[in-house]
Image 1: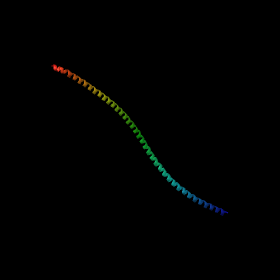
Image 2: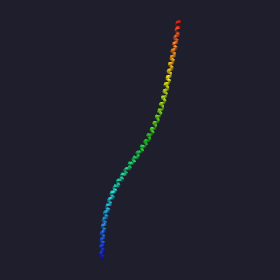
Image 3: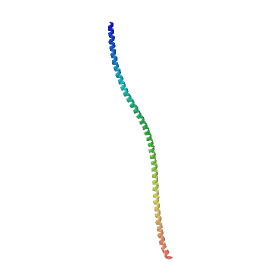
Image 4: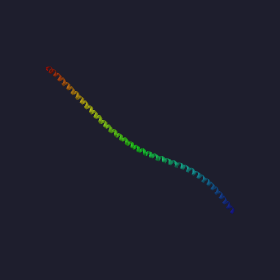
Length: 136
């Protein structure tokens, strides 16, 4: 029965060799799949690195724009303050001008009044001089 055991060992050897070949094919397929997926992984890692760089650039731009916004808001506040100051000065000068116009009108009226008084006095003097001139 040594021959039967030998035949059994040969059958087992053939079966194991066949299974080995199947496993080698499966291993080769898995290696190809792994290589393919690693290539895909590399693609995504490159894409992530690129996006991370873009994000960093955008964050720098955002910070710069925020600084610029703060500066512009400060400038706007200064301009508004200056505008209010200028408006107050303008209103004050307008009041001063109106006061001067009113004073000028009063002075013009006073001059007119005095001119009328002088004319009246001159008329009185002329009326009184006439008889005096006849006497002389």
